[in-house]
Length: 256
Image (cartoon, rainbow, N blue to C red; front, side):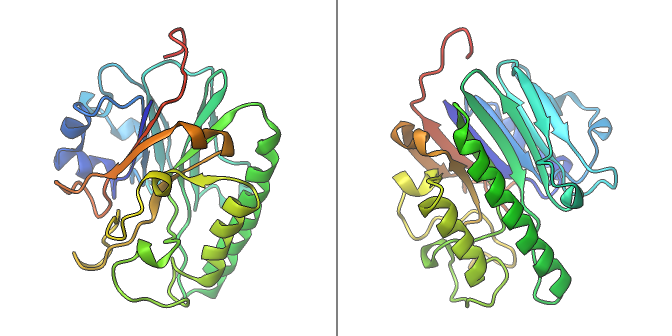
């Protein structure tokens, strides 16, 4: 089972840069895209609906952010949003449910030290998300949350020297990821199989300012199925690079 996640900086711009041509050769079962920057009805070209995939979108009426998920098989259900009403505009989430696994495409709201209110709201969002991740541990299914988290977890996830007071590397943000992994049992799938300290997925300012903020957080039961992880950097489709994860997950022939 191959899952690709990609933060597009605008899906139309990424398409113009060749993202969908590249995707056609990746043999992905799921593709989770974030930061669409348009509404679904704006996507009139067939390129946005690749042959062999069912495509689902959760966009923003203002044409901001937005997420999508492409899946090779028809899901049993599609869920949009996390139920955090106050954050429906800033954060985006869409989830495809199958018999015993759910795949989610998530875009977490960014924060800025210049805006205290945004920092407080992001903290509230993460409190709610922690509660959601805790609650679904009781469900008899596995989960994959693939997306742009706007957080670099460890020093090995950033290219330049930075500090605990830099947004995206704040101590409280990194502690949240610590708690999600150590207290709730979720796993950063990429770091299970790739420990290199030069693997970055986002370059916000320049080629020497890399951050690994795009990753797949998976439920504890998925650990034994993680096989391979890489970040595609040969060609740039946005300021973010696609993350590719392979899982030796026993998907039934009737499902996939």
